[in-house]
Image 1 (tube, helix red, strand yellow):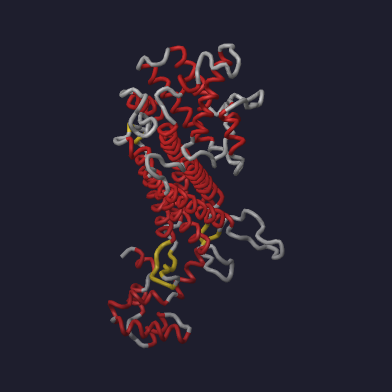
Image 2 (image 1 turned 90 degrees about the vertical axis):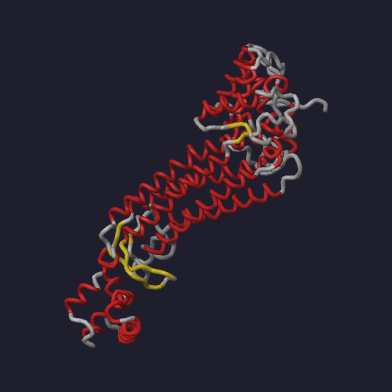
Length: 452
């Protein structure tokens, strides 16, 4: 295609530079975690090719050495290609092939661009195609991000919520269904539900990782394995499993593995579900802390910053609001992945860079959002036990416990009279001599209603 000037300090070559010029779109390069995952895949491929005798030990050693630099993040500035590029990710695969070959030249004292002693296509890309390498990298990098970023953050949040649940175990409060008063529960029980939601979110992370175990390596261009070795994929997957501790395996059907991105769509679904859980928790905590005098005000949220430029002393539930926005962002990214999976035609899905960007961005934001919410909000939540008790004593839904003694209709009449006259249930029942005081005290004990 003719000459192409490349920056003197670049380890990439002409093909990468063409992609830089062709795709000046977003300013977002491929995610760092994806590039590190691509380094892992190239490491495994070089090792597998050496085992099969297709690559000399010296070339394999050099490729693996540079790949390890990439895995460590040391060469990140040499990956300048925009996310919005060729849909197979060929530009990024070419990018890493050139970087590895040129860095290998540097290591042995040869000039950059000499393709000596390692050739970017013949050696670094041996037995591979962008069409199987990039889907494989998508799976490897996202699985690692889920395990190393999201799971620890969710575990941290779950522990903080469980700690608050134990601390609030003796605080009885009004339950609410339909945003209306319901029978009592403890604040600890309420928070135990939030902790259980996050525990289930962690189980969903495990399911998402399991969905990514199959790798497309070995399919080369369209799934037939042309120019590949029949044992190459299995060996590369075994090396990747050893390196990561995740049991990656060769795809059962290479045509599905390259044409469809259903596994990525499944992961997006799990991430969207996790986002729903965290948003629900954040919104509930925001409601429970509303006030301080005209809302529920059953919990006291940590003060993190002034809440208004005009209302002195106002403090807002900013951590809940942050997490809700994160979750909305993640749900949008998940929908992008769904549409990417839908719009991959014939033998290759050509939206892989956008899927990679969306999943990694979702994981990154969810993990950071969950961890900050745990540290800056949940950890410092306190119960306003007096406020909770006041609302319980005024609640008309304690009448539920009277139903077995008075019958549904008479209990409902008591509740209506109490509401209309702004009196307590106890006052109305005693006035009507429906139960004696001792029995009434026992029946209307709020704590007993939380543990029937």
